[in-house]
Image 1 (cartoon, helix red, strand yellow):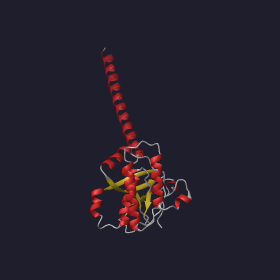
Image 2 (image 1 turned 90 degrees about the vertical axis):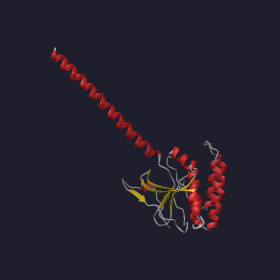
Image 3 (image 1 turned 60 degrees about the horizontal axis):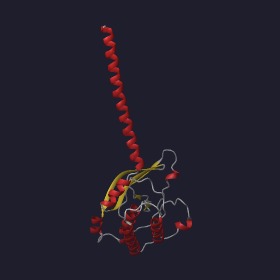
Image 4 (image 1 turned 120 degrees about the vertical axis):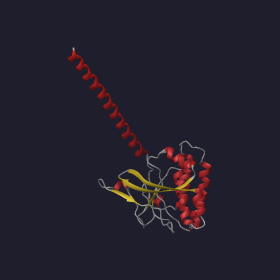
Length: 224
């Protein structure tokens, strides 16, 4: 069975990097850590977990953008794909990282079906390094060559992306698929750095002007 990566178990400055896996013929098991560590929930098959997740989504007070019907149709599609693949994978949730909302909306608008991302974990921060997107059109062209289990992974990723759940997925060979756009954390950090640089430049300019004025006054005093 594959490694289930636990970001909390990182010691000091250690970080892991996982490369994007090739398309696998068998779905294997989707392994992640469960925040509640509820063993009963962990042993449930994926179909039950998705139904529960959808149930919670519709009951939640989070504002919706009119996609409930779309998501419930996608839900049926996922379950059909999983049943067709003949595998009964198990999926455990992790708490989602901070999402870049604008990027998520763009992904939805452009009708992307899955994201394959090279990621490195450093403690609790998630940094995405490389992205490759597959559109619905591309995957429907490949559908005839692809096994059902691979298609099921696509739909699982699409569903998780659409309902902001985003787990990381181990495919058994030490590689991890992570369905997530750039974290807001990384964007905020970049923005903070930019602001700091701008402030520094402004301060330098101001000081230069002050110095010039001071020198001018000194010269004028000397000439008098």
